[in-house]
Length: 314
Image 1 (cartoon, rainbow, N blue to C red):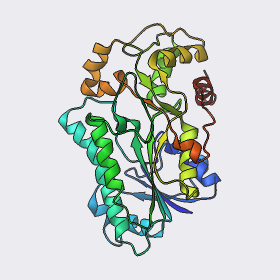
Image 2: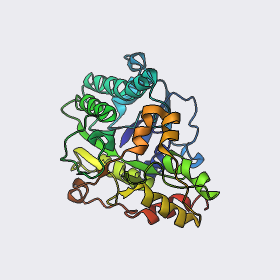
Image 3: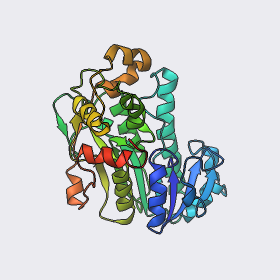
């Protein structure tokens, strides 16, 4: 298929692009960057590249390179969105979190509606934050949405994606913590744990719903290719863990101690309200993966850590 990829040059895209190419798909990548920095060199020759800001309406003007690429696409993967828990949630940053998701998705679905033949499938990202936080409740795809800031953002994001043309199949992936050694939460934790100063963040009792990066990429590939995939699917491994278990397992994997906790007040000083994403959590599982005959290769945390660290060394 001809696929248009938005927001796919970062942590997930570095693994997703080669996987989609190996599966035989023809890819056009949309990015604000002028060059495919960060993507594996082996996959660059076969890529088409459109440099623009997909959240800006002018990027979707008639006859623009982006609109032309969309008109030729048979499917779209939209993972666009600024990282949630890396900066303080000032009013300006909250607006950036919202615009990078909602504006990009709104411009995309509006442009799709203008086409006589829109793409046949849209894979749109969301997050497990959709369910809100809880210390003891377990959520699946049938659970109601939460009421906090992140849950509200996810609800609005999914509602915008749902405005896609009737002819377009929509799959919304509610993504958990993506485990990879070269970025994200694990990428930040690895250097600290490797020198023996790792440990749980906050109480350690908060739940972490995670997925190893290659499993997420396999899920996106399955959603692109299999018409049975529709609606919301939780992109998580079947074994959520507490922060304490996560830290202890990572320490064992690296052969390092994991006894020094990161105090919650310190994290709040650094991240403000954004610390809630790390200090509070949600236990999320998927009932739909089994129905869709999808199985995570890394269903247990030790296997995920081994997969993530095998190419970078311990």
